[in-house]
Length: 228
Length: 284
Image (cartoon, rainbow over the protein chains, first blue to last red):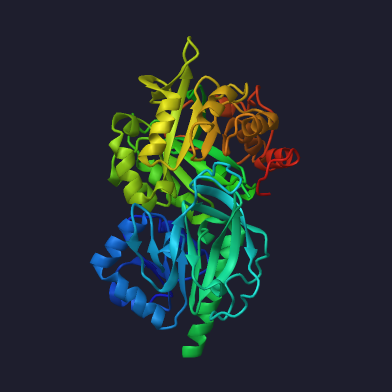
């Protein structure tokens, strides 16, 4: 079988729903593969580190499989990279799911669990499950993607969330959108050089979410045009 | 913002979508993915696929249904019915499910909840509780579509599963299911008040008022609906081949194109408009 190079490597760390990420790629005519093969990933034009699963289990697997170096190398190459949900959280320095765990430490910051109560002492239901609005943060306009990830998406649009933890990047300049859940404002997406990462699931957020995958696809296609 | 969800629940038997009363007496209604696609277009916030005979028969159809749906429907899918092992869970997640719901296996072995939530993350594990009110007013959990008594009291069990790492609870009133007489608000509220994880109310909705009740008086985070929206689908899609005849179930109902006499004709959209007009945040 021909093994041509991938548009997108969907990085496989065993236990999560990668199928829907791949479906969203297919929907945007991206040739993708769910893989943990080092060379396959590094040769791809872009990569996605997907969501769902536990922080500690994921780091343990990334560590033992040697994927940490691969992800670092891929991101250094400057090619478009997307982290989704847990895949966003893993990019930070450390997380606190089932004890403190070291993350990939690509984006300085940490991952925190939602508090049990908000500032008005109201009990917060955790996980945060469901659709919520993304508000585009002020000041963040530059990015490394040819087509910005949120191109043609309005502030206030609904995206689908499924998480108990959220990322707190040290540098607030990287924050692209914030979301408010029970009076807790958190960073729902960020852009760090060639890395776009979101807490919500664009692949599960209907038409609006698919626009993000399309912007990713258009950026990949543009980059390809530059090379050829 | 805390947005409430309306979830279309699709009960699956073999290749078909079915609906029963009190989780029994199943009628065949059509092909699951036709319904899934329609509800996606109509604004459902999630889909739940429940394999209602999984504990009794083989289950090859289910994974195919999930994959086929996940390829074209870009909203979260929860899959339940007959999931017994970590490998079972892994398989449905790999087929395109985002969350799994567990009942029998969780009640039989509490450690299973802990293990599953550690591996897949708390937010992936939904515990389904099938509740039946006893003559003394207490609610007890059942398995196998309300057939098997477990001796486990509902609210205590709900608190326990939260402690063990479940991310969400779907509470079904077996007494109300398929009857159209409204949710069991007392049951829903008693669970919602005692846990700090989201609760999905299921069983009994036949009007938008019932749905509003579950949010306003039951404090539910989400509502799962079936019969109330299925008839609207059948009416809108008259003439298409709804079902595969391959074995399975009672299709007399469908052949006669009878309506659910107890139910109004509603859509996800019309329910959402109704509740939003009455102060409930939801995605429209």
